[in-house]
Image: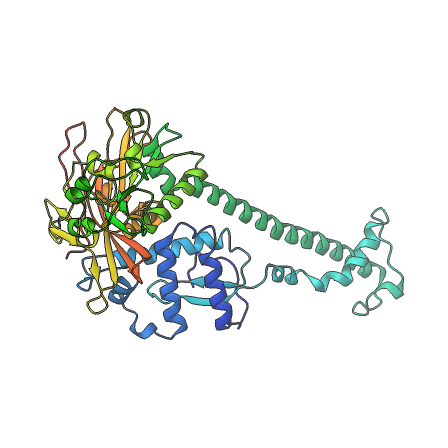
Length: 500
């Protein structure tokens, strides 16, 4: 067990499997792990291996590929993601047991040099009191008799003297009483020292927790972006569809549109719809822009919840309703790629990474992220990845872009994926401590860092691991490229951890 944990263990007591499983769930639901999605995923994976006795095959490569979404050509010798995340998990567990889990019955740790969690039963705090000097209890009544008579050495009646103290000469009895009194004082100081130590430990844990909150890298990341703006604009995708009388939807890939429910001119529909031949047989059509993806909705909820905890009240509106005043008075955060979000297509035109789609129907699963200046171990193109047999989506890619706004002191942030699951992954990554720390370290390696009043300008490419095609299991950093700044810095690229 890691030496950082100072709570004692119950001697010769190993918790049952059911107790260990409950403890893992208790940790995952805690406030300490609430925004640490990558570490939650890692802890669940490692615990499952421990429960299933699969530790003998638990190698760094296995963890990287199966738990941290690394590609099949993942090389632990050049990519340290597993060691970094294991170290962070150890630190997070220590933070948990110093706060939320200080009274939990089972201690979980990742021993140094190993990847499999260990489980040990924690000794109850009450066990410390069991070591109080019970052998002195008989002496207390003798000392109390001495102290209760103004310090006069009056021996207790023979019937009150414990059997372990036979009748002795007067001087011997006085010596015994004085010794007992000294023992009582010593015991008092000992018990007081234990209580003082506990109080100091609790105060230290509280101070550490307070300092951790103040140094929260997630809040620091968003504070540097938002500055004094307490009501930033969050623009969600509002892709336009054409709705027929049977409630079937047809994608309206471009062209001027009207308010929701307005009639569509047949000529306009056939000219700009993704499938003109099908639209021609659909009959009367109406404009519809009230649909957006589940990943976009989840991302919006996560971001709004974080801002609420920071005392920020965002303005939430469809992307097509962003105004020049919004861009001048507020920071703007846009969710979704240029395939789904009109504002992203209009307002982002900088950086090495860009969304592209060679398919004129703009079908998002055929879209790609193009890397204009790939560095070693980077691919020129990133596409969604599917199971070769079932075609179920397994991996999405997303971009996080922080760029200058239209006026000094205001910024535009874009969090979007090839699919809406990628958008959710981008939001999870930038609202989790491990994600922000990984991003911050990558930027620092490039000599770029955010300040309290000015964020770093960059594009981050993320890989988002999926289950069932729609469940986001986690997001990992693939590469970071910085953007030109007003100081004339040239774009640079961050460390790349996976290619394609």
